[in-house]
Length: 201
Image (cartoon, one colour):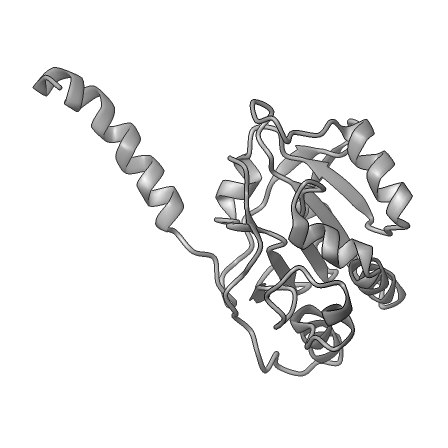
């Protein structure tokens, strides 16, 4: 590669490295975003200021996601969260250029078939929201408090596999974080390492 070519490519390479190396942890202010939901309506995180919000990175093609939904675990947690007036946003950051990309209609149909109960399904077709949160896996979970601060970031639970039966005995980090945070208590386990399929950027 010539020096001129390197000079043109290097800034982009460095930017991509910085984005992939950046991590969003508990205690960080949640990045705001504006993205279309499955019906084409614009959703902004700032619309929910004053409420607890869960962000769930998802992809129906991922075996780890299918294990959660196949066991009914993610849907049960969504409904529990709704009972606490927590806003649940399911985010699909699969890039539109990728073979696993799903349209809003496809995501809505899949969620309906699974009996899911998110407040909205977000179609992050450019992957910008995923990159803003440095989302690594599906699932990758974030809990945001009413002030806009992330109070939990990481894995859905402690059973790092695709077994549906293990979901019944798993320690669900998001459930624990929501129970503590909505009761006004500090989250005892605020950061964990996410596991699952890579987000398809």
